[in-house]
Image (cartoon, rainbow, N blue to C red; front, side, top):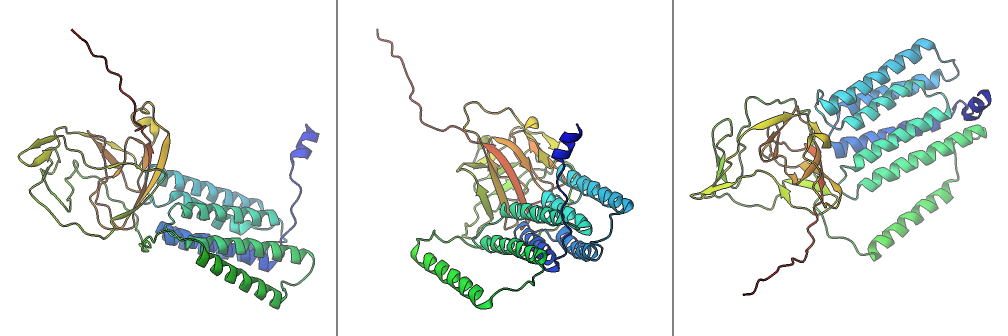
Length: 382
């Protein structure tokens, strides 16, 4: 047993003395947080995380040669458990608004552990967590400019490697200026030439930067009838007799209302009406059930037979919209950053308030098998 423990034990990691290397570790974290701010529309936890991480890096470098104290380790462990409670409460109950809880947890984790970055292994751990932040931001990235974020993070990783190894060799953080400038200029010219030669995809409108505040709205009473821009929706406050009057017509426009990142083409579904009379559609079935912001597959209807698997959709709202979750059906699971969700008798999910610009929600849907199948028929002859 002692021999096995000795083999499994990691070798000791040297103390990281390179102030340049530590600066690159913090810069990689700052780049990842900037990506979360730009593409995730969240800014409260990122600002606090950056400030705490900067102070933590200063403390860690100043006390890098001191022995770790028990009470500091206990305090940091308690803060890590507090961050874990945050992500659980935010993911399941949306107590803090439900805006990117996984990314906020990673930011808090880096900020807390920044007060104990003594060894090179600790610095690598901070780098890999910041890389996970970049991945979470990539889920909401809608343009090619995200490549700049990846390039900056990779540059910070390279800078840490260079600073760390030069410090071990007791060399200064300095390189030949002319060869480095030539290399960068050559790479820039080669990239511009490839961009000019290779065929480019059709242009896509760049997503605007919209900042979303936490949404603490809760349901008050029954489902309210949302206001649709192209039709007139009537009914009482409970939504029991909601109907859509086709005699009313609005005007269509070219302005995008949402961006959708999806893994497969599919038909979307929103409100459902099943009874038509005198130019109006009415929902004959009433009732709803209230659910948490995250609805797992076990609370959804069973998997439909002969489906082709599941795919993920991420919706980003650009204009004010009714509080109706549009998605591909049938749904396997759903997460929306709101206080609660309600599912009506037709399976449509509703939010407590209207959807505002900057809000996002994610849906996992089943992909139905819509392939053409031959139908065999038998004729009877007399």
